[in-house]
Amino acid sequence: MTIYLPIAELPVNIFVLLAMGIAVGFISGMFGVGGGFLMTPLLIFLGVAPAVAVGSVSTHMAASSFSGTLNYARRKQVDLALGAVLLAGGLTGTLAGVVVFGVLRRLGQLDLVIAASYITLLGTIGMLMVVESLNAIRRSRNGAPAHLRRPGTHPWFLGLPFKMRFRTSRIYVSVLPVVAIGFLIGFLGALMGIGGGFMLVPALIYLLRVPTLLSVGTSLLLTLVTMVAAVLMHAVLNHTVDAVLGLVLMVGGTIGSQFGARAGQSMRAEHLRLLLGLLVLMVGARVAVDQALPPAEPYVISIGAVGG
Amino acid sequence: MRAAWVAVLLGVLSAGPVAAEEMVLSLSKARIDITSSFTGEPVVLFGVIEAPGTPLPHYDVVVTVRGPAQPFTTWRKERVLGLWVNVDRRAFVEAPSYLAVLSSRPTPEMAEVDTLRQEQIGLRENRLLQRLGSDYADVVQNDPFRQAFLRVKQAQGLYYENTEGVSFLNPLVFRATIPIPGTAPVGRYEVVVKLLADGTVLRRGTVALDVGRTDFEQAVATAAREHAWLYGLGTALLALAVGLLGNLAFRRD
Image (tube, rainbow over all chains, first blue to last red; front, side, top):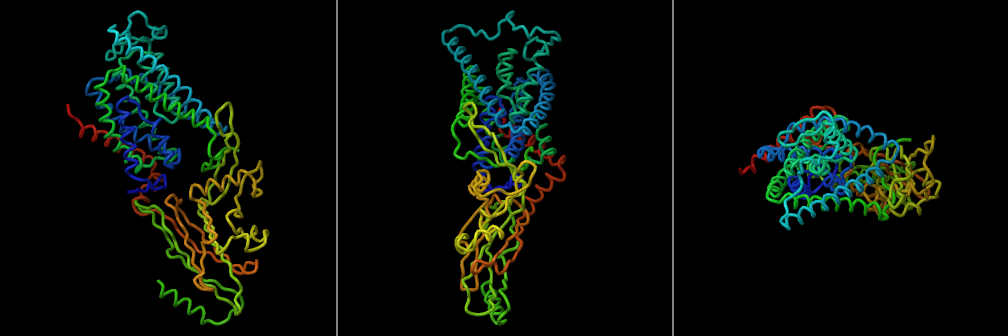
């Protein structure tokens, strides 16, 4: 059964869309990532224009992350104070990212920067997560206690001025690195067209020493707010939000994220981190392979005039 | 439908000899409605030729369908430090968003190269205005960007050429089936029909075809464009509602 998408201006199979929504929703609920880094390429593969894909995925991520946030909030695994400080940096970063996005597009080098960012970021973060979680799994196998929270061995940047106590996460750190992380996530998210959850979760875990499940919950909250802002921005500035496409993805995504969240709760934290690390590595490798192999068609056409 | 056409045909034939060829054109429908289940639809063009007398020459017919013009950018990828990246581009300032060329036989056989180019007969002969430095012009046919543009558009199903797409039902009545794909852009399409004999264009005719969304699809598209803030807020609220509903529906604890 096909359905016509009024903004994307093309017919697609509704069951394919639903299945994509459920699959990405499951992953998003399980790991607390928005899923944009998976969904956007899938939609482009279906023939949706990249701009419409990015705009419509934001609605799906807003629905999915709201549902996920509620789950974690009910279990008191969302740190509102930490989320607010991250958001202050995040929204500034998003604005900066949108500006740089425009400059790079005018220079015609946006594709290169996006591909290089994907490969570098996903490769590095995925590798770090896999190595760390494998170490953690080995430690717990050997019966040794986990050493994630070591009092007195905080890295230097957590001791900067403007220290603040985040009671829910049980950390007492300077707000400077928190705002900086938020800024970086917002900046890269706007530049790469993704929510940034898969970068935020490890940043909270490894840099700020926030417990894994709290990191996931707080990251979902941040994704929710930035994605609602993104829906508005794309709708008003670019007219590229397809509500019909978004609705189908949302319905699938919401169902998927419920099962994902439950699967995530029942898993050991280090196993969860290992799986997410492998997934991130796989997507990074996929982008690298796509960029390194000679394309079947060395020319691409984009709608609209670009630069001079 | 058929009876109507026979009547038109008889009327034309009984009108007696005329000074030069005349042509009557009609589309099976003047408007294509894009509904929620739209996956593409063919439109049939009928044409009747009024000949000035016998003997009849061998007629050739070319039907060119052009969708609304749009600007495009064609990028060329090249290997840089092991990665394939866009290194070069060409702006196609004005090109048809949809282009179908249907003919009664291969267009190069119909007339001299100059005539084909002048009259834009054949997919390759259609003018594609490009920006070259500070100039606006079309380029030679074997220009790699131009060739790539036609190749990619054909692969997308938006450009189409069929050298057997026009069939003669009798020497003076022809029919062509225009395939409108599901991805066809909305707007007014121009259907240009050219009648040739012995390498010269005898007659040109144009009919319009409208491709438009219906009710719900149109309402969504209009809202997105004209009430962007409301549309954005509505979509965001919809997202939150779906998220909340899903969460409550699946709540077990």
